[in-house]
Image 1 (cartoon, protein in one colour):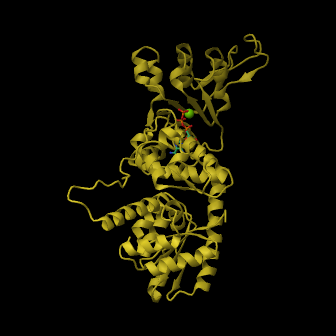
Image 2 (cartoon, protein in one colour):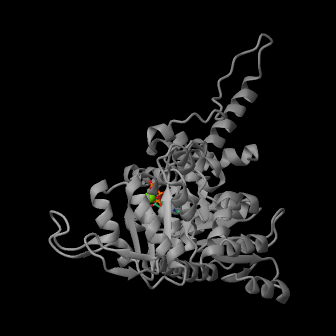
Image 3 (tube, rainbow, N blue to C red):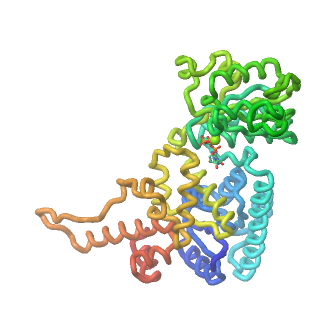
Length: 458
Ligand SMILES: Nc1ncnc2c1ncn2[C@@H]1O[C@H](COP(=O)(O)OP(=O)(O)OP(=O)(O)O)[C@@H](O)[C@H]1O
Ligand SMILES: [Mg+2]
């Protein structure tokens, strides 16, 4: 059942949760059942499902609320609603909100089976199309820049404002914060998108070669210049040049760069012929350019020329709310790239990710998830699959149920019951409420576990 479709089932009635789960599992689906819409949203925040089956009437959020959430967040899954009695009104409402279909109680399982199979197929197609579209566009689309935090939203709104201008942009951010991703998104979503995007990493090219890389050279203008060569600026004409790690540029080149930007003309080394330029300039740095200006390492006039529109990218530790989104995004992307079913993240793994400080920012997260996907044996990524500095982070609120007997004694049966409940809760958390796995963790039968859960009213 490698590729079993994931179904999330929401119903406040424990009997029907148990029953339908069994039936669907027998059909080969992987099912998680929860009692409340709120629990469903928590799961949806860190996992991907193909199908959601939900009762329309629930104590808290309703089935329609869940449907709306799915649509608002463009989750690639289909929603099937179960209604007590399909008044035309609720049915119409459900379909209008974008439900895949609805089915009335008492449930006809054969009918539901057909519906689920259809919905799974459609979800798969949608997910594949979405993925293919993103692949084709490459990494250049805004919706590939993941984040819901106010900090990243601010980045988006600034990007949108300057998309259709030619303003010079300076992207500021620590290593791995997404500087190049943002630069590409600006280019490929703007009017120059059909024209070249030419990146050049000023820090990676030896200083004596950088000049001819940027501006080109004529044959024979220096030893080794065996042919005429256009510079990156010429290549970027009518498009965008991305000057990465601009802070490392040597001073004498800074002067030449400033002149090119001001005159909007370039000449190759060893030539006097000038080429008119129409190039959008986006530069990026992880250095503190103002400080470099103060120390005389960066020309002040060039700094002002480049820093027309600054876009500061926040480090990941300042937008922790994006961590689950990013983790899920990379998990999906990496599994699809590796052509394997999409893995889940255990709650503990997610908590470790949320607690970590991310000095290497988003790039570090991408690498950590890729490593975890490669290392894990099961279909769930747990703490120990993460790099040790992340997975080993103490999650101090996991209580170990160890009991000291107080002087006045204790009620043994009651205490054992408490410990049992604590262990069951832990096991369910660890396995994202998949009872079969929780039971395996506790080395008891699934039926025993189900009985205990029922007895404790958990
Ligand atoms: N918000 C984001 N959503 C999705 N992916 C992201 C996001 N930010 C960064 N990434 C991914 O993280 C990786 C690092 O991003 P990028 O290369 O743009 O960072 P950078 O700031 O240029 O890093 P460096 O300073 O190391 O060059 C890339 O694979 C990029 O696609
Ligand atoms: Mg970069």
